[in-house]
Length: 126
Image (cartoon, rainbow, N blue to C red; front, top):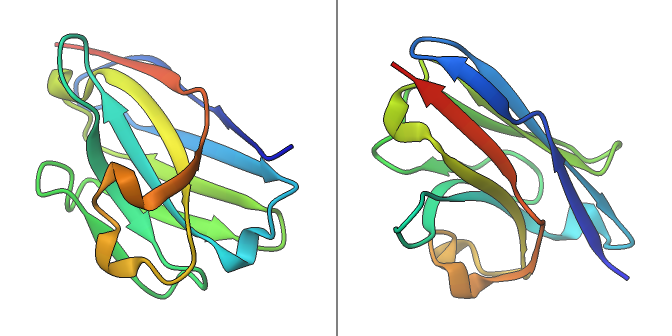
């Protein structure tokens, strides 16, 4: 059974940094594009960042561009999200997701992702 397990969430203050990790099992990790999404209370799930299978191409939501960095280590079946200069509006449950091969064009859409983690809470206070 495919599993995506996030870790690294927690609480911090505005301006802090956190790094999220997502370990993927069973899936041929290097064949799947990966992404991060987040959902705040009362809001829809929104795209945060995406990375291609080899890690060469990345994309970010405008709200996090320049502050967040998505990377992956195919040898460890793990993707990461480094979050710098955190803001209170970054507070949400962050989920990693695996995107079916060949869907880079749909990297920002929830529907493009086949497998999802359970999510990890990130809380930023002012």
